[in-house]
Length: 294
Image (spheres, rainbow, N blue to C red):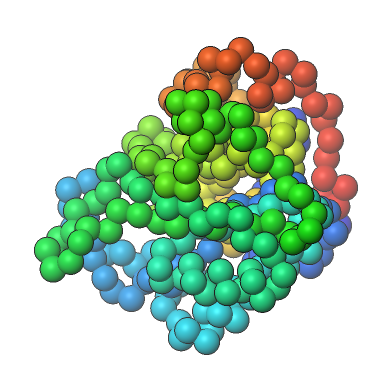
């Protein structure tokens, strides 16, 4: 049995504090979807702009630069562990920049995943390029892949089409970067916005699905999952960030905060326009604990 750092009262949000390489082999539960935001290995003394101020981009020891050989080995190891935790029809989403995403794609192919799409997330509010010597960085990539080349995956085509103005949604998503209201419990250096995770979850899971994040950070994946009536397990090795994750989940125990957050996410509001219960909120799932979790 694995000990939880935190479980929400309804058992739909679970946190493990520790190294994902050590914890993933300790249980055999299969998930419907995985989202992973692994290290980009960019912390080598560079600078950027945040809120109009020049800041150092070093994020921590977990993001320190490594050789390409070490990066490839790191990605292959966690992708292999995650593949064992996916249902046969499950899918995985991985975010990155050019610094790590090609290594991830090669690892996916090597391990037998089938890459479905490479999403280009075009940020509508990117930070400026302070050197003025090259184009401003304004995009990240998100690979979507399924576990098996032969077993079909789930894709909510009709909802994605509706969200996109009744046109087929493309693999270029124009969505904002993290907003100030999403940092109410503290700031994570690589925190993803709820609008991105909500779209990913709506596109590839059904209500009640179990979602894993092996590099949970401040658990945006879990907050988005719970806002959409999905269930979550996150693994995070930095105590500062598991504490932040717990605080964020406790925050949405308040119904007014829960509803406020849902109303701030455009995809959720567009889905509700159809008056279809895409989220299963009117058919509460019974409380179900993860069988391996203390």
